[in-house]
Amino acid sequence: MGGEILQAVQLPSGDILDFINRDTLPALPYALPPLPFALEDQVLPAGVEFGLTEFEQIPELLELAMTATPFKRPTFWPYILGETDATSIEDYLVRYQEGGQLSSVNRLYAGLDSPQPNRGMSAFMNQFRPEVIDQNFSLIELTVYCPAEGTTLEQIGIVISVDKRNYFGMNRQKHLDGEPRLHIEYLRTLNGNRTFVWDEVDGAFVGNPLRRHQPGEKVPFSVVGGTQIEHLMAIFQAPGTGDWWIMYNGDLLGHYPATLFTMLNESACGSAWYGEVFNSARDPTVKTEMGSGKFAGSGMLNAAYVRNPTYYDLSWWDVEPEDDLHGGPYEPLCYDRSQLWDGVLFLGGPGGKNPACKWP
Picture 1 (cartoon, rainbow, N blue to C red):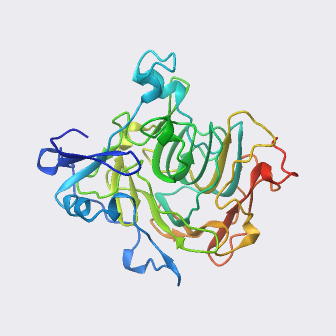
Picture 2 (tube, rainbow, N blue to C red):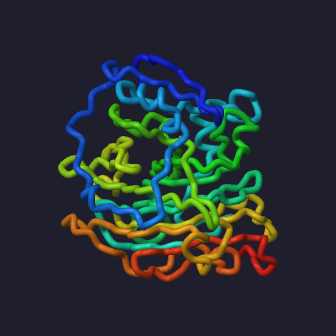
């Protein structure tokens, strides 16, 4: 993001936040775009709350964020410590980062896919803290993509994940802490090569200098039978520019320029709301959970869900998607999903903790 660092703070999680002088940050090329919905119309159910992220729980940092922009310092410790054969940070990002994908090997999915052209999408997400074994990740994602059918070539997503594959933490110990974190990602295809990039590590994402939240931050999560947390998320195009903006709990994080893409620069071909588990070894007994670790039939207070999934058609009308099963590999004895009913899609499961679960 650049700019003058006013203060660097290490959070209890080990994350380092740089608070950057907003006067030294590049100005956005245009005014912040309007959201595709009215925030005041987005109401939480009784007994559900937004919760506070890690740094929002520290009053002095909240006050600092009123005048300075927080930026989570990226870490590349496996590369720095020589634990890979990557020849550069760029090479490390290409070869040692595993992106969330709409459909791929070593993964199982449970969710909803809508192959309809759109200008964006939104939903409330209720994520728990799934148990994840080393070299796996478990996430819930909202994404827009192209093309509508076949191999995904371009994609933009916002994710809450427990990730023990991609080494987001400060070091190996922090990496294994199993904390749910907010991430963004994009995929594009150049010369036949598909490249996934998380958060802001390659400089393609243009951060909003007025934002409070930052990609990679630790976020609150729901507890089975206890506190229920929802996260309001949206991905949408700025009218007139085609840039793709990402919003978290009313805060515009920034945008991916339309010029980054060759298909998503016009509009999205489809949208999806889904859970995904990456199992690096395709071990049929892997005990990595999705969501709360409970199946969709466990319902409110017990299962993860997406609420009010919506896409915005090419005329900006808000549309509830048809209840179409996500197209990735689906094994309902491992992880399953409910029907979309009254605006709620439950999803999740125990994985190999259920002896009947078999990976394809």
